[in-house]
Image (cartoon, rainbow, N blue to C red; front, side, top):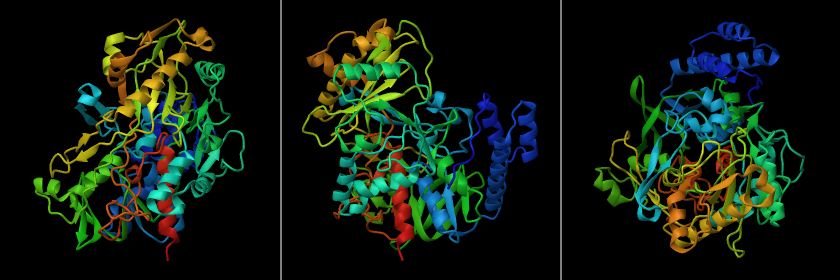
Length: 580
């Protein structure tokens, strides 16, 4: 599959608006071309783009008008895993009908397509707006848990980072599931066919002809190479590639891999889903909320949906596959009677399967917003404002790194740190991240009303080792930021401004904690009878229902989760298409 044709243009926002208008049916292909020409946009790639978008619009409009009562497959969610699954499944099973349901709208807003303003999507209609409830372990702070509500899910509103899991992550999944196909070597073979890698060729680790465009940070902010020089001066390993050999080692620092193509976001929807949306066997409904699953006995038969035209039921002949993410997937299971019996009973929900681990094992990566410097002169951020990062172990005995340092070309700070230190708007940050948390939280229903958001009880930093690991990362960030190699870009250290120890450091850790928005683990995969799904991603206790998203991770991958979710979607497609 080839991605939708890109178009490099200085007026991306206009192109994005025209894309949205064409897909939504507000203008015709001719109108698209006339408006583009009036703005001075031209070229063969523009005609290709218009043809592809027009074919998608026409096909999906027809599919919506002819909405069927039954489809072979129903896929809930168009995030990284869902897009990968649908793209592969539609191509492998051209005669199978696939209904894809997305609660949000199309992904053509300028703020989606322009990676430099990705953070402006947070808190908008493209975000589910969940919040982890306040806890003593975060000094009684509630912490936002942003999650994509738009075609492409998180891959449409994230910071565009393509980071593949460590070997130790995948080997852990293989051991927990009892299936070596979840292990590193098979995962690596999937990534080789997935990637359209634009960096230095590497036959073992990188792919070239796949649907996912990824490249080293292009024309990075000068802070990025300065940070890497600082790492070398501190005898920290600096790598040629953020992925590849890093996955089998003990970490290291490098330029980011990003899904930015000609200055525009190449989301997983653009990589996998768009290329199949002109096919007759794929129907995508946007602005369609799935309220519950339907069952006949213990067999999943379909979904109840809420849309602008009202509620209705749609059935699945073969499978229902949930790709709704670490919060929405367990919520949907519980609303449908799959969960802890006592909790379901408290909301008046009849239990279909007593599955007490649904909603448990909640994990997320913590990003500390607190190490900030004021520069001597302001240089505007580039790409997605994060172009260099690294992984380290806070303890040498760990099987893979637990700390991720991310340079952010903005004054990134938590609510408390921002108020306390008031960093200038021109500041930049070097953030310590906790990517192998030991703390575990849970997800609970607020009510039996599908419109109510669930209760996210994350319990961040409730395990003392997590506080120690972040403290280690903060000290390392300060060593790097205050090194001689960074002097050209430092006027002063804004926060914390001095070495912290004891209770001062602990409170700085807790006050600065935010998240990467990588919710995972709430429908754990395993070979034991308490696991929510098995190695084939079948929900235990029922038939014809599977899950393919971050919720199935037994242990969260120690990297930004987009690439890991693509792997899960690819594995789901393999499982569905290889069976007899």
